[in-house]
Length: 605
Image (cartoon, one colour):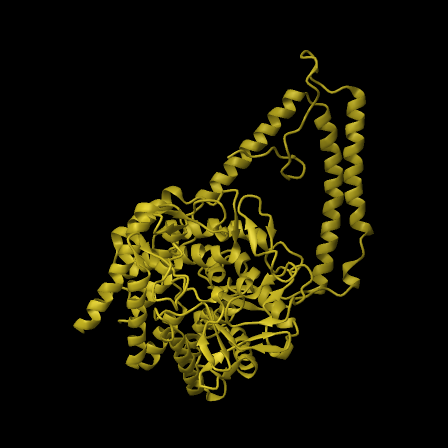
């Protein structure tokens, strides 16, 4: 990797200096007097301008600050050497006015000293020959390269890995259930083996064309999204040879120093989430190291006026931006709200609170904002800190924000009461404004758009049935039974969306208008891309109720996928679930291996 030359005074990266025209005499390497004087004058003026600007800026202590109020927030850790009051925790304090003023005065003094030092160093630099300056620049470059290599090799602090229950719990006693589980495992083998043969190293697979595939969420580079995403499923299913192949590819080929623009959200859940899951399951350090390396590449996405991250970031340059279609350059709730779990674990594993602070900053900002009818709109402008279009959905654009609030509470051993309160407040508003019953008695979750409820539910929103069931324990006013029942009603509705198609697979979204219930109307909404959300809700309801209907519904979905989505080169989505002769989209999504098959496998435990 080529490292640009460094300016010795500031350490900022700049292009290599042009130290003179090509016609410079070889016997005279020093700069002429007039050039010295002009260069010194420009450098001095620049430093003086920067120095003086500091003092002419308005005193921030006299103006209202944008204060997020981070006060005494604890996260678990094994290293108390970084200022924590108690072993095993980080302690982050709120703002202190006196300390802030002392810090400003310290910075002023430092700038004065740096100003004088810069002038002296500039004078000394101008006395040196061209060759001497070039030698110094090369020394600085070598030093930076060495520091980067040292940082990459620096071991991360050891942390205890929890004992995971049920990962290798043996086969089910029931012979029928055991056969069904083996079938799901065989489907996983078919998907993986064909990816291994035709798409290895690519992000995803085209199973009909039998070649690699990628989308813009992963950028232009081959980062092996399917490999990373599928690791935990392989491990849980006992496919350890396949897991080993994936691990070897990651060790030898997974490189995040690429000039590629990626989705922060997708890379977080599929790559960082996949790597962390593989680490916790296997204990292999390479997964933790790669997760941390990638997380560092995502941090520049948070460099916005509000700290709300950009949707996209270039892994090499750190330049971020938002999707052009997202409400005048807004960030998306489901994207910036679905970072918490992975980033908290990164702070736990590294001892560095920076990741934790980034996501807590997001939470604090959201708490301070007004919410129309208590609902979180899907769009938030990272420049202004204001909501974009008033559109609220528990499906696409909003879904996993609510999931992560609940799971943050669970992950904290139910001590993160702030997350639980935000979750409870949110679902109460959702139930009041978005959840309705159709004429036929089906409970559905609509979408709120500028004061109007659209009676449409997306496949992505079907995860909420499982979420309501998962969050029932610990709910307010002893409403556990109510939320478990609500989860069951959502599961029934989503099952109907599957059952009312020719393929017994659900469409991307479905309507509840008049006589049309749980059916897609528009052609563009009739596709199925191997999504897991409905099977996920079946799994949660089966685990909490042990009602055999959920197991049966899950098995029916697995059979439909096997019958209509399986092709010789893997599994493909279909374009119209209402057509008895489906047309394939020729994409094997990475989440099919990471989520859909995993949940199907667990349905039989």
